[in-house]
Length: 487
Image 1 (tube, helix red, strand yellow):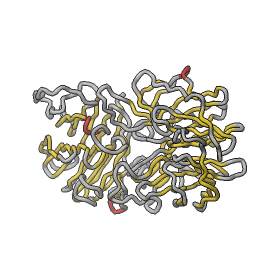
Image 2: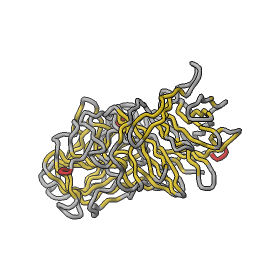
Image 3: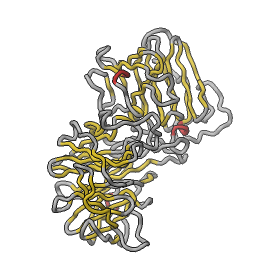
Image 4: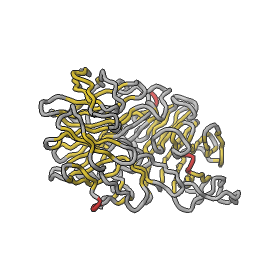
């Protein structure tokens, strides 16, 4: 029984490859920079983020107009001829690119743009060393990934008008067959042919799905991988559902065993996966900012200019400098981390000086809760669509302050609930969680807010929640950032 998800939090569209006994996995990053996080594992269960594929501005230029639904989508990672290859779609630039490296945790090349319209691309090499790119519209093209040129095609992979449209395809060479695994909305579908040129025939059935003991919405791009012992597994995106109908963490990475029956891959129901918290955190729970560079798990919407942050200006602290005067619009200084647990506690030690700075939990500019410090005061601010409201305040003395945002899925409060001493206004608690805001060691929260407004059912975009540090006026310093999953 595998404790799923194996990577918690917003890590959609996972793609995986194996080299020897090492597995490498990448995910979509949408509007966040750095782009395309890359993870390493030796067992497919315990993963550690080792870098980002797109970690330089010359590789990834996301304009301030890049919405939360765009940016980098559905990367594929493969290993061929001693190199790692990642192909992905940049919806902001309107194109498909390939980057390569010999060391996944090291420096990746600048993008090579493909002269091919492919909504969701995939790469595979045949026995002659030719590279094939398959696309969502049901075509395959032989390409030169080093130059971005099309050598043959695109060729139709299907015959007949009733063939399904292969959403989010992956192509594999197993035995004497080429298999195409793609998303059909409710479950992965499989087809096969003798060559990448097709025509492909659809499997007589589809791989069985097992949801496990708690509701999981499993959909999107699945990727097959085999172990050194010959076992097969499927990594795929899924979301943990809540009885309220809201889900808050985005698509996470789930692992499912696969067996082969009559020449077709089938999800193995006999060893169904068991949903639960991730067996290992993708990165350390605390950052004391003692290194010379930011850890790879830190992300910022659309970019983070070098002048906006420093780890050397005040050694042992992360110094942030305002580049915009509001979180309501792109271009502000924000450094965050993906929320990975349904119940969590995030704390920071902040020396604001005379700045306006704090801790924010967000889905996008128009849907977030800010824990903000200004001279002499701490505010809790709710931004829900067109409404921005200070919901609670308290005075504070000068000097450093500890801010804590705690999320819980039990003992929920009604949407109108603000302070623990207030009586609810007759509104029944029906959201997915409660988000509480604590200052220093105060026994009670300054405010508690309904988490439904930071869910995709209310907001736009595909990513899950991100929690992070920000400054919108002046310069502020953060001594540490501490993230804890609470079961």
